[in-house]
Image (cartoon, rainbow, N blue to C red):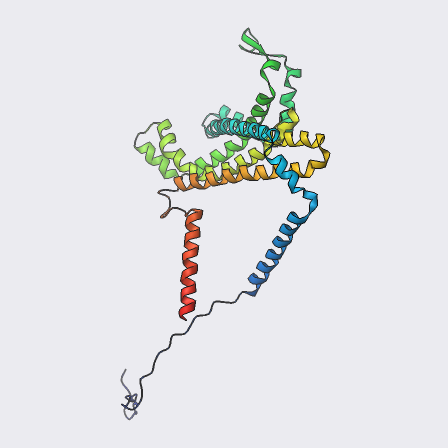
Amino acid sequence: MSEPPGATVTLPEAPTAAEPPKVLTAQRVLPLRRPGRWIATAVVLILVAQFVHGLVTNPFYQWDRWSYWFLRPTILDGLLITLEVAAYSAVLGLIGGILLALARLSKSPVLRAVSWTYVWAFRSIPLIVVLIFLYNFSALYKTLSVGIPFGPAFFSFDESKLATDMVVAVVGLSLNEAAYAAEVVRGGILSVDQGQHEAAAALGLPKGYQFRRIVFPQALRSIIPNYVNQLIGLIKGTSLVFYVSLLDLFGSAQTMGSTYPGDIVPLLLVVTVWYLILTSVVSVIQFYVERYYARGATRSLPPTRLQKLRTGLTDLRARIRREAAV
């Protein structure tokens, strides 16, 4: 930009040899202070310490009796029944949920109506009501038969002999679980991008192959977290089979509690710890299954707990070194 005539231009003075060069010093960047976070952390730590102190020192919990009952054969037998009921119900409920979800997404109005009615009914009726109703089902139907409606029966059987306590518990939990699993599976299928369906159809792939190899594997990324929540609820829901005369984990503890009234609290703690162990194992399995199906969907797989621990220790050592250098 040209200066007007007669203007005086001031040039910066050149440094003389006598002036020492300026030394640039590195300034440390201080993190933003967050007093609210520190106060909240201190309050939470105090509350946790108080809880642990009361849990350990309160004689009412009777930890010696807890250790006595924890691995007793009666408790372990009930635990085995809980695992059996939960495993059978989870598999049958998931299969039923997949069939109901496919019927709900079908173009047949009859299949859609029946599937919607089933899901609506079993999500509305409490599980304990379903179990008690099935337990007394033989009072309504002495025998069950298969044949032509309003016509001859091909064969029949005695319902009371078939419906054992284990069968009633598994059927009741499976019917209830299938209703919730159907919505989980349907939501997972709908989460798959429509372009995937169109691309598979453009390749001329059969419908069954499209579902098995393209749609369902992608839907599993959405289905697994939600269904594992259902599975954890199912494990806890097995405690209701005690009301149909099946001595599961909770039922065994209840029976021992009626025989030893002074050990009710230790027995409840035994049940609590075992349920915590079961749900924790399911959560660990969920993490690795999610990690497996995350391949190709994320740039890097989610780190495991051990990898997070190693990364945390490495960051801590690096921070200590930086603090010592400053």
